[in-house]
Length: 166
Ligand SMILES: [Zn+2]
Image (cartoon, rainbow, N blue to C red; front, side, top):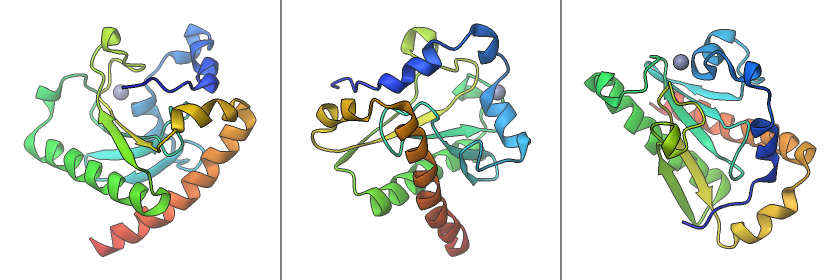
């Protein structure tokens, strides 16, 4: 996989260690401010949120509410819902953003590149032909964070509709 150059991620990398304390996947769902926290969908056992430091526009994360870094600690229902949410995310992004492909996966452990190594989460990253070329244009962080809110609105509407369909 060709690496995306995502210069705004420097904001995360440069963040002082004390600001990284706590667990974002435990703290955000209980904060009750889904728009600010970019939470887009709440399932029974897991929830979907947008990555604040995305590798690409529409980069979503799915995490169980359960604080664990072991897949083996999830029960069958929890694992099933994670898979259902993956499919749902892919469907919504496809409809709303028309990507040409996806990177979907999980980084387990720091050595594997996990930013939050203590709490499991799936990454869903939509890909477009040539995105590795045009991404550097979006190097202004402000532009990207405004984009996040717009993308949140756009995807949230569809997730809400899907929830009613179910
Ligand atoms: Zn956690």
